[in-house]
Image 1 (tube, rainbow, N blue to C red):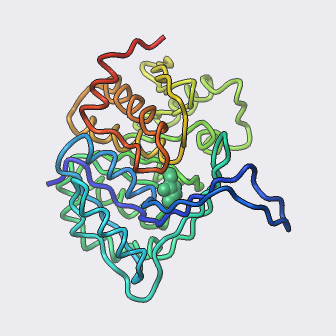
Image 2 (image 1 turned 30 degrees about the vertical axis):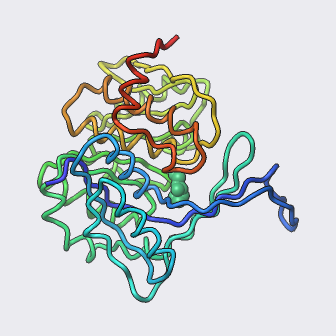
Image 3 (image 1 turned 60 degrees about the vertical axis):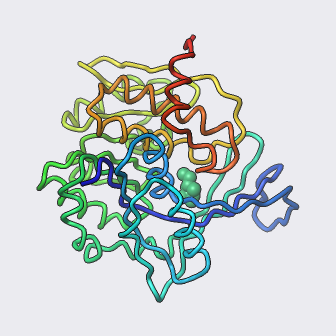
Length: 307
Ligand code: RIB
């Protein structure tokens, strides 16, 4: 039995600090490079496991030194990784992260993450059945995401879908998850070409009325996190933070949200925890490096006065 089960990606991250992004055809000098363990699946599982026990991660690695490094690293986390498989004929997922002073741009090569197929998933039906909360992202094949959601639905397992990186989603996917957690740019993609940012709250109300069984939660950076309750927008304010690196902030949010939802807390409390955790995570470099513990989030919430 897992409190939180994550089925998703594992990547090796090459994080390059640059003054700006290169133009097409141009070569520029970067400032430095760091190597981190990442992937939205692994990051979200680690974030949840720093808050609660019994978190499991299912996914695929390639048969290479990067895969070995990731496995070795995850063994030190409070995480069940017994069902991470090594695929002999492919490489581990890789992410090139270009980090400028203000934000980052990422290119992901899926590699073994594309081997999380429907046949692979079928081996883990029992784990999906026995999970309190299942947390998914979109760095594995979209057909597998739908397949997992159908299995979860059969067993009434609560599903949180973080639609990142964005991919067009069918109503069959959207309407069969319990929570969907886009950031504001992914939410604009979800709404399609008629999206108008100045009307984001009206668009949220409209979207929620069309998908009444799926709780929409939109992360809006410094604007906080908004969700719809009783046809009204509720916004949980952002915590103040000195930002060093935003990589993995969304993953921290989703991992902690899943952890708290698995404990049957109110949505307001789960979002406050997830928000506080994300604000702590951006204060250190790398996706998983800054992910806070239960004590750190608890302390921040207790001592903090949100303006
Ligand atoms: O969300 C951050 C993650 O996105 C990085 O760790 C990288 O691997 C990409 O998947």
